[in-house]
Image 1 (cartoon, helix red, strand yellow):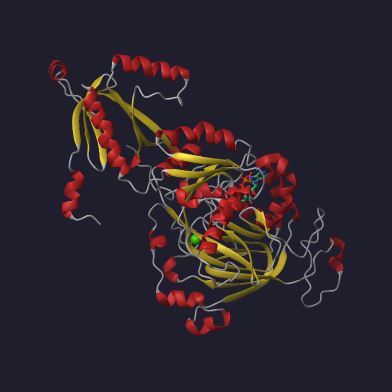
Image 2: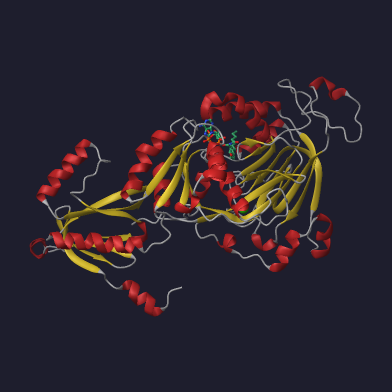
Length: 550
Ligand SMILES: CCCCCCCCCCCCC/C=C/[C@@H](O)[C@H](COP(=O)(O)O)NC(C)=O
Ligand SMILES: Nc1ncnc2c1ncn2[C@@H]1O[C@H](COP(=O)(O)OP(=O)(O)O)[C@@H](O)[C@H]1O
Ligand SMILES: [Ca+2]
């Protein structure tokens, strides 16, 4: 909080001059928060026309200035044509500087705009550059040095080009230095982060790729932090240490739902600008264990049944690129498998809202800022048996036949489903939304899927239920590994799980599905999951409610 004295100080004008902008005289001023310029009306013009035209003023937040440079500065990032124009301009107006700043455009996209001003003297020009840079250096949340990992094979295999053509030039304008590693194999980035990288010299890690590549960075950073702090990841009840370095995501994958759900768009330049201005978005991480063995972390979707089957099938079609998910999606839909099992979960407290309350997680979300009380913490650390003594609303158990079991730790919004799997899930509230889709007809399941793409409520079906949870366990009912369709005639014994729907004629159906954990397949069906509130931070700010136009 800033007091009145501090407030007055921040309003103080640091610089104010008459400058020339686009052949027009402007009054420009800078204080600690904003850089403003306003066209100066020409008195003679006003008198002759009899009407005073409203002079436009422009405001740029200092926190959204990318950089400031003298016009004659050599800029090799510009095209030959632009370099020639710059040269001509600097000959006409020798004492000019350019301010680069964030400009909001449609659909949460940001662009790097520029405005050039020429000054009456070289000294004045230098003064503007120096004072503005001084103000930028006071913004301590901005990264100066980044470690960048590029997956050259993610999505449409454009990661390297996207970084070089769209991201590196803006980092350069902002004076950010980056050490770039182009990965040579799967898990290269994860292993490098876990054991080799000298993290002390960096202010953040950037991942150029999809959700799978992000998952590598997440595993590397979280493992490194736990190793450094002697925390055993294999203990399901371990209190994990939050990671200090923020992660930036340059989307260059197939689904890119983590970027989409934290920024509002999958656009490399927008992501680069969020990194440059030093945004920070805390995020929950789910830990997944099988008995006392750590399996993986998840930040977006943990899906058994439908999404597990889609992923398992799509892995064989990697060569198809992002389209593999459409093909495998149709196939899994036609197979219409269901799986028997028991889900037990610890519900979240009522003050954290409900998956159907339509309160979406947005920039500055109040639910994510809610602090956990000590009673809540106690309730969370208690195991299934002792939990009942702590609170009446303790673990709940549901047995059934499920087409899909999805745990969404955040909305999982992506271009395929702009509102996501759980539109009201929160990024940093310490909970996940557990969605149970029970056995139903193909038509009903189709209706449910279709509602992910329109405004109808996908939870408003008799066969769907959704719970906001802090932890959950899943146990498949039948340990039998694989059964064929024609065996479904076998007499039903207790604990025997029949196959997916009888009329299915496609691939042989198994008694178990597999878990899709942020796009990776888990090799155990029985898992225990805990949500760790705000374990990591991203260079993002959540989705902005309204486009603030300046
Ligand atoms: C009738 C039309 C039905 C359309 C239903 C669409 C629902 C889409 C919900 C998608 C939720 C995506 C959650 C994100 C998962 C990613 O981690 C994973 C891996 O993404 P990656 O390949 O690494 O970018 N992608 C998938 C499809 O499993
Ligand atoms: N150099 C590499 N060669 C092969 N696989 C890689 C390489 N670098 C990363 N990967 C792996 O590629 C997988 C998919 O990457 P990702 O960037 O998420 O793309 P997509 O969204 O298309 O799946 C990830 O699981 C990651 O571990
Ligand atoms: Ca969450």
